[in-house]
Length: 271
Image (cartoon, rainbow, N blue to C red):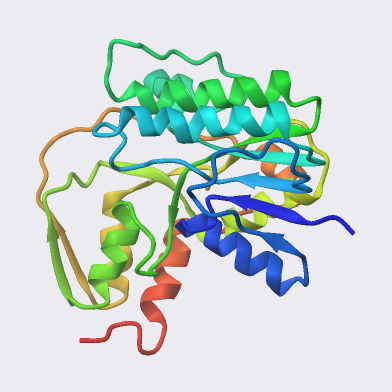
């Protein structure tokens, strides 16, 4: 029987994958984050979750190490049946409304410091698709959220505050928004890729931009208050196509509906 290796198992998504696989009775290996050489090891089915998020600008070399160098070591020297590389739908951001499909040609400017993240993810994707021997695929994750304290990002932080505060004020524009996917749906998509044989790139996303004003409406329906004081008009966001995700049997729930369900749970607010 094959086994699974989760690279980056200590992170939010990696730890959820380990829990989900273990619950299914799978054998899971979770290498320590300090292990940098996998030459000669048999890794079974690999889910590559290693990466940096919020602090990549301060740690550009660590970002490249996590997104590319360690991956290259596995692709070059380790044995594996399957590898799922976690990338990001952020690679579409420079395309604005023209972006969001896995077939898009990306536009990434190396002069922009923030693109150390996007370019390193794109290079990791290229290595998987061209040097993975037909056994590697790419999962581009959108903004994964949950109310769990281990989760990060705008929507996760908002839910965590909502557990402690009945009324919240944010300096964000009502017109701002992102594509969100709940962690359970993201894990379902990643497991479908890890246990299957589908090739290429897959958006692991909600499939639509949820505006901040929608979040305020969800709060209001739950008897709460979310006040948004930002006056800016944010740039339009790419619309992620999730037809390939649906084709492998995963249809994510609408993020606004999930948020409403979380806010309505008995005992959610602990103030």
